[in-house]
Length: 551
Ligand code: NAP
Image (cartoon, rainbow, N blue to C red):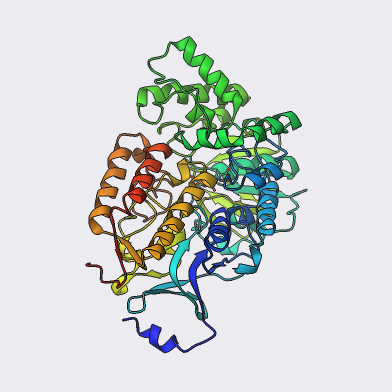
């Protein structure tokens, strides 16, 4: 029994709900709508931010833009919404996506059931009463039967660990928690640390404004053009006329985008054919280079080398100074094993007189000083430092909420050697807890709004099933979880991903267990597994009214 459950039982200020949802981004907004408006259960959302948006609320840095086409990176659950909303660009900018999510919140009247400015720091399962206790820094604020974590995969920033970082006297910004007001870089000497997807977008824009920009890059990336352009009224009309068909096609493709041109094998193709495919995909933009060229790029190193070499050649073509081009050229890891950033004239940015690239792998940052950054062979005076150093991805958001399950088991302890889940949405020992696009699901390699819709549907259908069958507790069995972990791992081992240091494997955070955190079998096979589990009355789950689930 949880002792706190009794002491708080009489406290009427603690609200009770059927379901509590954490996070008011894509996942939380849809979960609330589905639970409250389509199922008629009481649901409440908490979010640390002061408004809706999740990722798109926090990541307001200059140049922030989605890497999946706007018409695909959007909700499919409401045909009316799809028809009403019109995207202005092929790849939506952060402000436009935030406007969209605000529109969704207004259209479905969601804000009245969302409590903002509330960071959840404690989620404790009460074994006796079969309830979750939801708490913030001040104590328990709610109880609920079911908990849905819509906390995203990239919402806990990596902490800067540069020596004497706090001594810097200039301005400091982080891409993942950018100010709401415009940051003025005019006449300033700016240093950006990090050249991943966020850094690449921010660098391109900041260079246009700053007096001087110094980029501190550790590992170069395989970036390729995003291919953004305005969407014409005719293109929008055509999409809207066949949105249903487009969504079905998306859900039936590996990454959740309706690409269907990929040929089986790069290495089996002739050099001329490869060249033609890569030329098409490179300039067509989006994730076509990785998902719509050849199907074996993530599985066959020889095939992968052909794509990697193509992109390397493009970097050498686009960057005028051969020494800088060499520094920007990725080596030593296969293409696509780090999420490939998409760019708009990023490489040309290094042809500008006001931009300097510093290789901090060969000359590491030794310390931050009052006036800038000192590497092992130079000192750079700066007015502004921008951190674009990434996230404690996938497990970080869940492990930051103080989740304690059955018999006092802490999620941090259970996942000390990496995430253990069933289907990437539940974990043994933590009844009635669903995490949307969690580790060991296709998540970040599946177009996120669709992946979210699928998981929200799974979680809410499960809740509906329990209610309809006079049950109220659901928990995956240890056996099902072990088998799922083995399947996820066996698929990962057939790919090139586990060998690369990336946030996919936790290798970007010192001390984090190194394990591939993504189900790499693709969205269609994953969706089929989940559908079968559901159709068979939730295979792999213990369902009960009494919480008497064997440990
Ligand atoms: P990231 O890909 O993890 O990149 C972080 C960068 O910071 C890397 O260059 C990394 O170098 C560097 N770094 C980290 N710690 C460092 C340290 N201590 N010293 C020096 N350099 C350090 O993070 P991100 O750019 O924020 O992107 C994360 C993900 O967010 C993306 O992969 C993508 O999924 C998503 N995202 C999407 C978009 C979009 O939709 N277009 C935009 C931004 C982000 P190493 O590689 O050497 O570790």
